Every structure is written in C-alpha cells, then in structure tokens.
Amino acid sequence: MKKITFLSLLVFLVFNTKFHAQCQATIQESTITADNSGGPFALILFSNNYSTITNLAVGDTYTITNTQEPPNYTVFMTIRDPSDNSVVQFGAAPLSFVATATDLEIHYFTDNTCNAGIFGVLAIFIVNDSTLSVEDNIVSKNIEIFPNPFSDKLKIISKDILDSVIIYDSYGRKVIVTEPSARTTEINLSHLKSNVYYILTSSGGKINTKKIIRI
Image 1 (cartoon, rainbow, N blue to C red):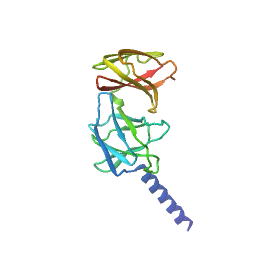
Image 2: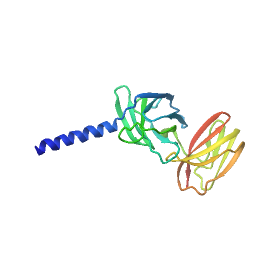
Image 3: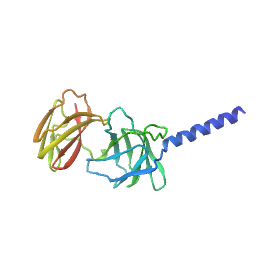
Image 4: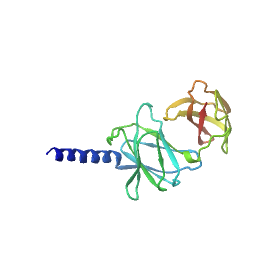
C-alpha cells in the first residue's frame, strides 16, 4: 500500500511539474518580428496571453526582460515551439533562451502555477544577445553612445532631437528617465552599480536600444 501511495505521489509530482513548466495561454495578443541586428523588439501584453515571435535566428540566444510598473512584479513565461507544442524554456524574467525554430510562442503568467491573474499593462523587451557587442563607441545609423564600458558619465549624440532616454537594469527596472529635447546630452551615472544595463533612446520617431556596461 505504501508503495502504491509513493508511486502515486511521484506520478503527481512529475505531472504537476511538467504542467507548470508547460503553462499555455489561451489568447494570442500579438505577432512580432525579431530584430536580429542587436536592437530590442517590444510588445505590450496581459496575463494569460501569448505572443508569436517570427524571424528568430535559430541557434541565437535571446533574453527577455519586463519593464512593468511597479517593477517588483514578476512575469513567468513558457516559450513553446508551436510546430510540436514542445517547451523550449520556462521561468521568470529575465529569461534567456536559445531559438530552436524561426517562429516561437511566449506565454505569460503571474506565477509558476499558470495563474492567469492580472498584470495590468506590461511591456516586454526581447534582445538578441548573440548580436550584441560592447565596443568603445556604440554607433547606430542616427545615434552615437559613448564611452562603453563607462565609469561615470555617458554621452549621447543624435542626428535628431532626443525625445527621451531611459536606462534599464538587467531586471528591466527603470533607473534613469530623462527628456533631453536636444541632439546631444550627457548623463551622470556614477551612482549606478557596476553591472549590465540597457539604454533606450527615442529620437526622430525611432526607438533604439543598446547594451551598456558600468565598470
């Protein structure tokens, strides 16, 4: 009798763990195209929804962070391959995964028991880590950010007026928000801890995000 009870418990635990790992939402919120040039691609979503991501580079590593308010909320995600409904990765943001197919789904929940509670409105950033690089200067078509890595101050030069500059930590929390309303700005970041950060700039109707490092 004890053996049967133990076996039943084991089956329950295995099934329960598998179920939690394979949380599956019911409503598709959006379809987005991956930017594999190193920039982020973002989406807005609600709990118990899922997003389909296309144009993923198979074999590349991606990292998902959340920027919801308040920042202490946790987002649990299951990344699934819709071709066979297999689970690629699961866990809380920030979450990294290796793309196993060009099209994958991300299912969102408020905890690891597939709870479809309410996030409110939530922003998710997904960055292709395989194409991110850290150089002395980060140069885009219209914007230059330097030095990188930095120790105290970061300078930004844009061809267009900088509408906003937002810096996130590795957990997706905003640490700096500023509206320069100029083509050049310098930000004092000496109070930040040594770590990896993401800087999001908005200028000329375009959004650009890059990885920066505080040394």
